[in-house]
Length: 244
Image (cartoon, rainbow, N blue to C red; front, side):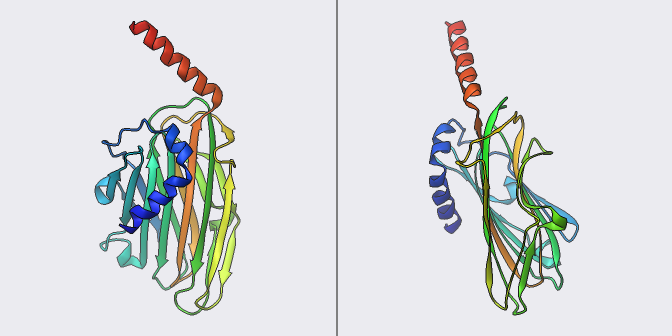
């Protein structure tokens, strides 16, 4: 499976984070949600609508696409492959093609429930990609209304970081142009952040010209801050002593 191969390569990039987070239960597929908004309509996907699998290192892979009964029929094609760990990180790869006859506003959000509440964290993330003209009249990709192409979202509504704010790029006939790369909290993860209690998400928002395609690859990683790690270790020690 090509998607599985790409995700296994991506997991190597975050091997240190995965080693730290290897306590995840690979027998329970996390309830990852993919929310796609195109043409003003919201379409939602969960693991029951995707190919999903667990890996021995505590990560989970997901591969999905828009069904022919909704987005594809309205002039859009969307596909994604994901690598996640509930302890937690997200790698979200997206391919979107605008098969309609006009520029469209697109939003894709990948939401991951986390395995434990973290009172203090270090975070980091990245995004890169490319836009390709598919109909011979050039292509334009941009953030929507001066916003950001990439947002790291915490607990459903808090924006932890943004990348490619006010971004725009164009390419000529049948050409391609790069998007990014951009990152925060480098070396990832190193940016101090507060508590993360219930979920993490990557949100992509952009406009794309008619007949053209874009691919995006993003990551969002969080680990307990060093002080929080020490407190968690102390709490575990106290709990063990009480059991004795």
